Image (tube, rainbow, N blue to C red; front, top):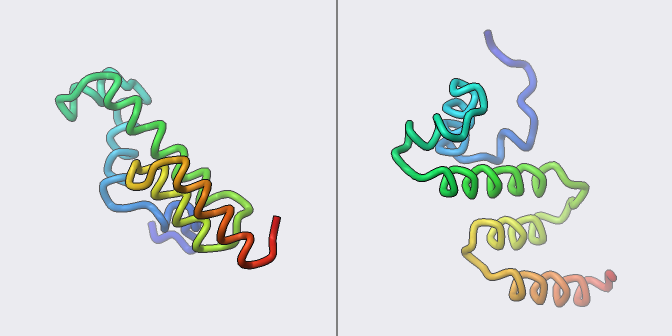
Length: 99
């Protein structure tokens, strides 16, 4: 089956995220089974799932500004700490004249 429409939030995910979703679905949502599949602990799987949910929420949000979405995604991925992300977004909005 060829999909005519692929949601934007799904297009924004990396291939490893999509593979994780497949494993999660095949395990009927059992994080314990997903942990066994990846040979990691339950908290590790829970953290990965939480971060994946946050990335989807960022992509699915009403935020249309690509820069702000990028900064938020970097914060979710722990590439950028939360406080720095807030400062960058605040400064960027100030430059653009937004609140």
